[in-house]
Length: 170
Image (cartoon, rainbow, N blue to C red; front, top):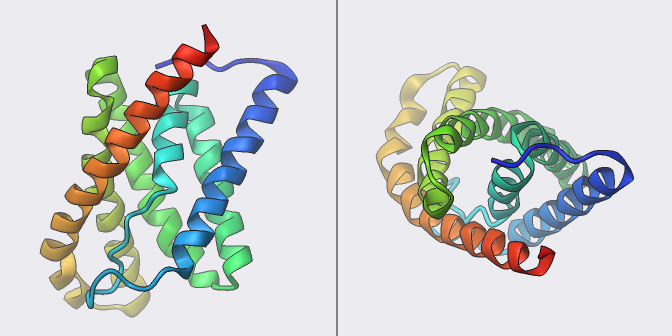
């Protein structure tokens, strides 16, 4: 993982990544549901989070994720989005940070499916707490399958983004 940059360039990059992730999140929120099972979506904004964690470092990745989660809840007008997205996002970020220590630069795409599974787990745990029932965990097997598939897609996309941006930066 890369270390954090300094100064205005870093702040500008963080702001741009947050804006891109927020835009992707808001556009994806307008798309019809992919399934009859609640909560299944591609999570395309996570491409930016994976990129930020691996290219800029865990702290900057957390800043991008936090900004997107908070602003996404504000702009969508759904305060409950903050609870679910924060729970899922934080657990997902922890997994990305752990795997970032274990994976090589060519294996970054493998982190995303694991992070997606834990994102869904975090959201289900938040839902269980809010609804005061463990019954919501019945969705877990379906969400794990969807998370692995979506996570593979976002992971490959993030890996490609990292590779292409490294070429541009040289």
